[in-house]
Image 1 (cartoon, rainbow, N blue to C red):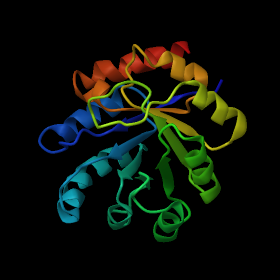
Image 2: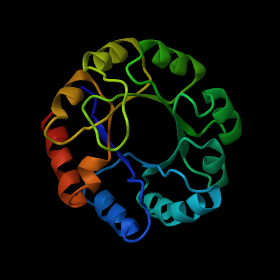
Image 3: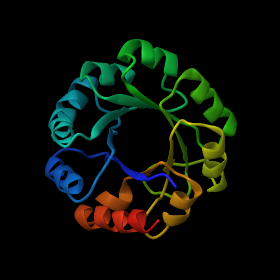
Image 4: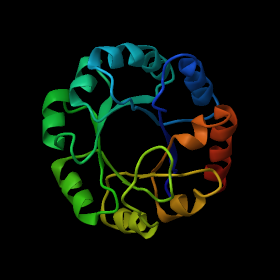
Length: 205
């Protein structure tokens, strides 16, 4: 059984007191990566908002991953980029960000997309949504057996995403998720308690 790790995804509003909340969440228990996910703002503003969060992650050796934008990831020298199916190719990201960048790809519930991403050189693939989520519109529902199938076949880590909470995550861990990508379950309440609750389940699994 591999040790499953937490992968935090930002809320859409990362201004105001959010940097302090992020620091508290990261100090509440081990977190492998943080994904900076903002919408409908220009790259200059995104870079400004990212700066304090990136510093908080760097101080704690947490990977800082930019959602969707290869150009923003390059501009701020992020640790990597997470690509949706319409955000450019793994090859393009690798070319622009270098061989050390962490490149992840959203594969929904598709074995075919995941195989393609793996063959293209992705560092991880993300499957979901496993549960209903209010964070974003989801058209795809994935089942835990997808994680088990991937683990048996491939060495590349897989991320489970979509409506994951401390209460429902155990089957995903048991099925073989390397990372649990969580957003609302942490930021919609007390982030410290939420991270601790996830770690109680991860420790028990």
